[in-house]
Amino acid sequence: MKVCIIGTGYVGLPTGVGLCTLGHKVTCVDKDAAKIANLNYGHSTLYEPYLKELLEEHLKNKAIKFTTDIKKALKDAKVVILAVGTPTSNDGASADLTYIKQAAKEVAENLPNNYTVICTKSTVPVGTNDLIEDIFKKYCMHTNWDIVSLPEFLKEGCAIKDFLLADRIVIGTDSKRARQRISTLYSGHSSELYFTSRRSAELIKYASNAFLAIKINYINEIANLCEKCGAKVDEVAKGMGLDRRIGNKFLQAGIGFGGSCFPKDTKALSYTAQEYKTNMPLVDVAILENHCRVSKLVKRIESLVKPTQKLALLGLTFKANTDDCRESQAVKIADKLSKKYKHIKVYDPKGMDNAKKVLKDKVEYAKLSTDAVKGADAIIILTGWNSFKVNFKKILKNSKKSCIIIDYVNLLNPKQVTNHKYYCIGK
Ligand code: UDX
Image (cartoon, rainbow, N blue to C red; front, side, top):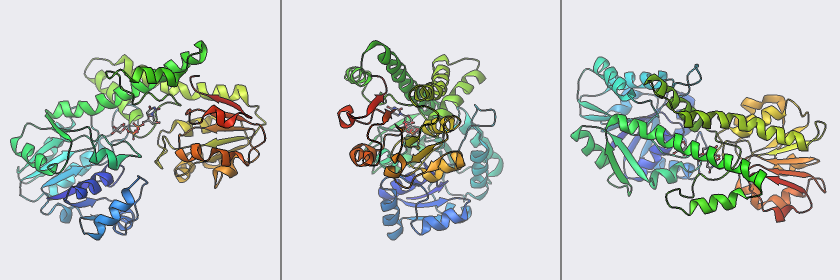
């Protein structure tokens, strides 16, 4: 069937090529004409493994196209997916619904009078789909539509895989027609379709992300204790994860959670709880602990490396396999270090341009990891890129004979770096 997606970012684009892979015809809309032109040429505007290949394939077989013209894009669309950003508002907590309300209004004003299901894929606070429904009632000339919550669960760096091999697809609707339409949309998909109420679907997204953020915060607290009591956090995590009730995912101790979701969604969930006159202390503590972890890890570096010494930082993205530096703990650590250290060289395989937008001239940017470590007294690994792990012996070729290695993502095997002073997390 024909699908229209509003928004071509980290959610819209992978969803678009994923739906083409299921056999649908997709038209993606964005206000950014330059971005649309790029995409129609097959130039993916963001890095996601397999995205480029799928984009080229679906452009070639005319399954996907990109336009700024929403009216044209909505023609014959059976499903419309709203995938615009819902960033944190200026109050630093609530979700900013400006873009989603704008997108809803524009779709409502241009929607042809054929039954269409409007799906909100953007992460929105509980009750937002009711608000979107009110927008349609106000601006759409007919009522031949249903508004459905269709939250995304795409991890950056594996969005395509998460789309095609989703653990579940959550659909919030009370409409039988909408249920049938979405069942058809996903008929070629292997995952379970979980139909629930709209508000439950909205909350499932926040509840899931906040739980994962708490889980990460928890293993980082365990790591702190391991460093004091002689246990090893990777061994503890493995032993915990063998309990199927706990599971082995999201138990990797490190520098804390970043990205465009966990920081935003935990704050928005806590804000929503307050709006409904309840509270979520576990979520609040995870937010606070995650924030404080940056200073804690910087202090440890300061205790090991003198201010006059040279630092090499490897990894700036909020996680590996992405170019995204939004709310990256690694960038926050780099920024804090730049206040004390004058000689900092940084390198990241994909995130240098995005990191530069934040770090500007506070650090020096190396073209290669081997350049970054040249003459460095201390090498600090902040993002778990596999390329650092497999090439570390080569990376060390340019470093000093014996330097300090601080591995904040427990990427390396200490045996790889015996002639250096090696420090890591939770051991
Ligand atoms: C997250 C959710 O996982 C996804 O379902 C949702 O749709 C969007 O938000 P994302 O933020 O892209 O995905 O990446 P994720 O892999 O969840 O990592 C989030 C942060 O947690 C990263 O900074 C990562 O480094 C950190 N993390 C993750 C850990 O520190 N330890 C872990 O074990 C896993």
